[in-house]
Length: 199
Image 1: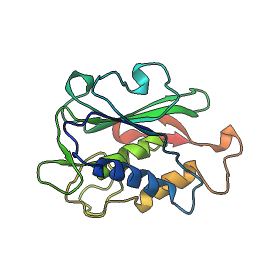
Image 2: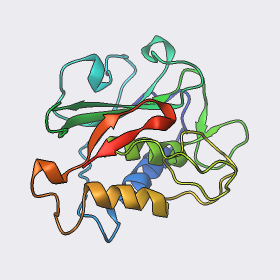
Image 3: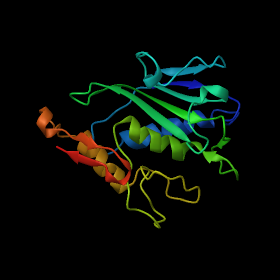
C-alpha cells in the first residue's frame, strides 16, 4: 500500500505509520495464510486530490489516507472506509484504498481520551482490504474480532482474532486450495446482519 496523509488530525509523529504497518503485519503473519503485503512508500499532501478507488480510475496502488474537510464524503459516525475495485465475475480485487475520517475525529496511537485509536481502525479496514466482511454475533463480549462493525476503545485485545483468521485463511490459504472459481468464496448478499456466502 502507498500511504497518503493529511497531518492535521493524526499524530504529529510517525506513530500513525507504525500503527498502520503493524496492522498489515498482523494480517500477513498468520501461519495458515500465504497473504503478504508490499509497502510502496509514503506521500504527504494537503491538496485533497487523493480519492478512494470507487471515486475515480485505478491508480495502480492501494492507498491508505486520512481525509479532512470536504474530502471526507461519509457521515460523522463513519470512522473508516475501504473502497475496492474488483472484477465482478471473479471477485478478484484489482485495487483497494482505505480512507480514515480526519474531518470529524482526532486520532492517536497512545490511548489519549476522546481520540480514535489508529491501529484498531486500521486493522478493521485492512480486513475489508483483503475481502473480509463484518463479523456479527459477538455483542457483549470483551474479546471481539477486528471485523466487528463497532469501535470499542476499551477492547484491550487489539489484534487479529481467531474469527478473523478463519476468514483470512479461507480466502488466502497456504495450501492454495482455491484452484478454480467454484472453490472460491463469492458474496451472495451483503445486507446488514444477513451477509451470506456461497463457495
